[in-house]
Image 1 (cartoon, rainbow, N blue to C red):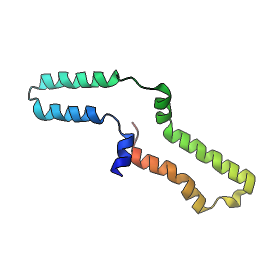
Image 2 (image 1 turned 45 degrees about the vertical axis):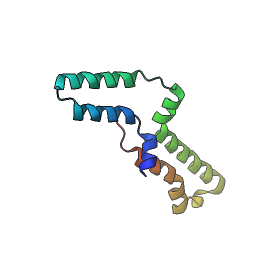
Image 3 (image 1 turned 30 degrees about the vertical axis):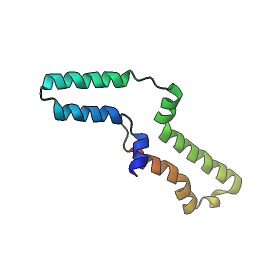
Length: 105
């Protein structure tokens, strides 16, 4: 589970750097200055816009795909085809993603 969580949490190096500043720098003003520099460096990191958009829309995309699949199944096989097992199987991907990702901001 720790490996899966590491895939969805970014800024590991930044967080490690901030922890080192907290441990090693005793001057509060200097520590705040160094932390600000870390945050600015993180903000200047180049990203790929489509990857960021997909990542930010992950939960919503999974929810829309679930609804589309349920609609397809109901129209093709009828409402009786929606079983608890099917719901558990289809909802599993979104549920696991939500558990690993954690609460959003």
